Length: 287
Image (cartoon, rainbow, N blue to C red):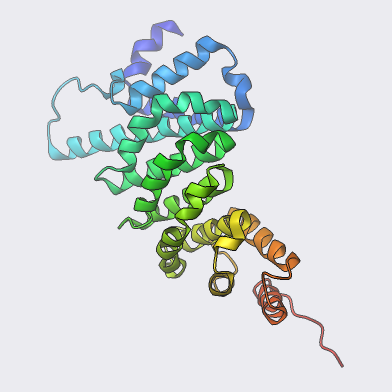
């Protein structure tokens, strides 16, 4: 294996494939893959080198010969970074709350991508941030202020994919962070930015928006104008792209139906009827 090391190091396609396999195995195999501290340190160093563009495969041997070669070089550069960011997300999934210690190593670079000029970089970084938040769980709490400021700004992003990923990330932050007072204070701003997203049929935006609002209600229903928000959510049912967001959405609806003060009885009936219609079921006729 050693005699091929240098060749592997300078091959972007190979490095990208290694990243993909590592990220997938981390998510499915868990922390056992990196239980050895030396292995973990090597993975962290490799990823850090790639996302900061210091890996040998990212160092140009010579200038590109033409514009097409330059475009291809830039595309491969981002593929390598993109797959390395997937490894960061995989580490978060595998390590759970303990990933918060590693996050500080990656934080500056990932947040820089999330605030960059390129839409693809912003969308990817915000998506990875969402996965890191979900992976860290309650350990994300100390980072709430930094994440919230960035994500609220990205909810107004001109790129729909970035906006969609930001909606998902905000929902996850609401779900896992224990900085309740800080987050609730931003509820009106978040809701005002999410409202138009429900009607923008692109990049899973309505689905991720519905999931975000549902998580907001589940965590602090008293801070959401249920009567205004719920009909808008029900109108977009069934979710068409991101079926994972069905879980918080229907859990939220079930929870509201359990609280007498949350919904008027006529609204409960209307919501149940709408859900039955969107799922292709109808009530038996009474005769």
